[in-house]
Length: 87
Image (tube, rainbow, N blue to C red):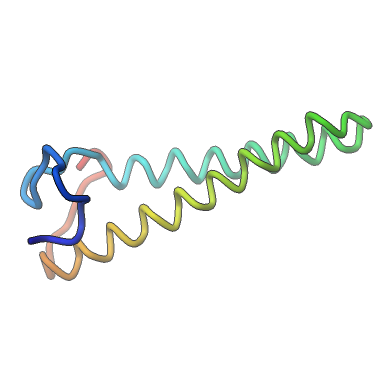
């Protein structure tokens, strides 16, 4: 059983069900964007909006950690393999 994808997933190691590199780029963009919006909202005294943006930034950080763990598992299973942004 491979560990790079959760059980009962439709994909395999050879054909992933999720583009991990693309998810990594999008989660990084979401983290930077939400952190910037949080700072701008807190400066404008919109505390509730700033808090909401901080929550979304934390979700992006958690997603980044999960993606990196899956990429590391894939790297262990396929040493030396190079993956494009969309696989």
